[in-house]
Image (cartoon, rainbow, N blue to C red; front, side, top):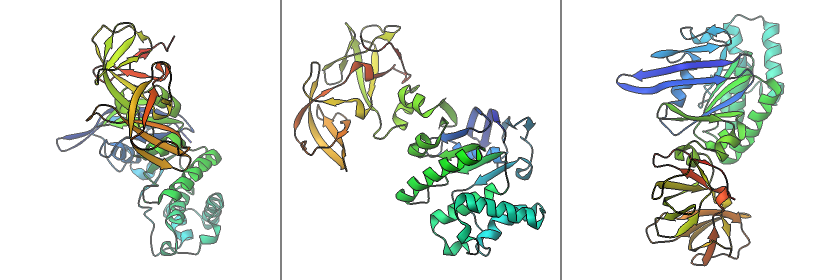
Length: 361
C-alpha cells in the first residue's frame, strides 16, 4: 500500500484544457472518491494516475516514487474499468491469473493468489466458467479479482457499477466497502453517482470543469458545502436554493415578497445584499408554527414510507422540495404551512460561495 499525491495536474486535448491544475492527497489506506458531472475530467484524471494518459503538466507520486513518466506496468496500480474488460475466450481462473502469467510468476504463486482472491469475493464456484456464462455482478467480481491478485499499492476504479441495475448496484456498494475493510488498499474511485460517493468514501473530491470544488468527508460536504454547486450535487433530493435579499433584523425577503428569518451571518451582510438561501428537503417542517409560510402542494412523490412533497408558492417559481414520513394524509392541491428553521439554513453570497453562519439564537 502507498499514499497517492497529485500536484498541479493539467491535461490538454488539443486546445481544450480538461484538467486545470488539480492537486490531491490520498492517504495510505484511504478510500477516496472523485465525483462530478459527466465531462468534468474525473476519468481523465484517473487514467492519468494509471498511466493511460500523459499529463500535459504536473506530477504524480505513489508512495515515495515519482511515477509521472512511468508506464502503467511499473506504477504498482490495478485498474477496474466500467466495461469489465474480461477476455471472453478465457475462464474466470485464467482471466484472474492473466496479469501474473504475463509477469512470469510461478504456477504455485499464481494459484495461491487466484484462489485467495476468489475466496475473498465468494466466486470459487465460478473459476471454470467463461465470462458469457456470468451475470453482470459476477463479471464485476472477476474484474475486481483480477486486480486483487496483482496485490497493487493502489486500486483505481472507473465507474465500476454504472452498467449494473439498481438493486445490484446497492449490493455491490456493500461489497466494495467490505472489500476495502478486508484489504485496506489505497483506493481512488471515480463515479458520477453521488450516492456511491456518499456511501463508500472516506473522503470525497468534488470535481467540476477540470477544477476541484471541495474536498472533505461525506458528512463535511453534506453539512458544510463550500458553494451552491456542491450543495446541490450532494444529496437526494437536492438542496433547495431560494434567491433573496437581506433586510433588517436578521431577515431576508424572498423573490415572492415573503419574509424569512436568517441565522446570524459572520461578518454581517449589508441591507439589500443579494443572498441565496439553501435548505435540505428533510430540514423543512410541515405544520402550523410561528414563522411558517403558506404553500400549495403541487406534486407528491411517494416511495414506501417516505414522500417528497413539492411545494409551490407564486406561479412560475421553482417548487420547494420537502421530504417527510408519508402517512397518506397529504394530497396534491392541499394548503400547508412550511417552516424553515434558521439553524438549518445554508447561506450563499452573490457568487454562490457559502457564507459563514453563527446559527440561530
